[in-house]
Image 1 (cartoon, rainbow, N blue to C red):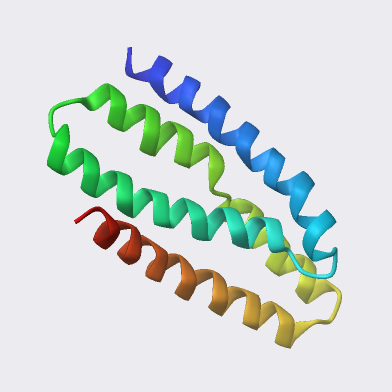
Image 2: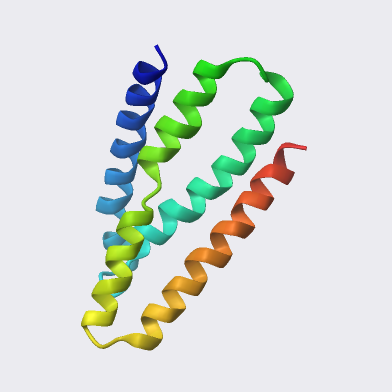
Length: 121
């Protein structure tokens, strides 16, 4: 049954990521991988918040955890896309932008997990 919950969550998360991929360039431009940065930071915040929430309120509900964290957030966040975006910036000779993107992605995502976790409590 766990596979079904992960698959359902993954479908929702991937669809949400696709929506961000469509919206971000319209609002923020095409010169920087904004969509990937946004989904990674939001996904990390949600991971921190939901992990704290589930641990406190529903510690024994494995199906909800699988749906939300492994499925939905696993489908929503895009570390592989982050890596491809980083490589694309390098290929275009934009080393400073690539390094800034990597630092922002990692630092903001870690901070977002911490804030998400703290936001629950």
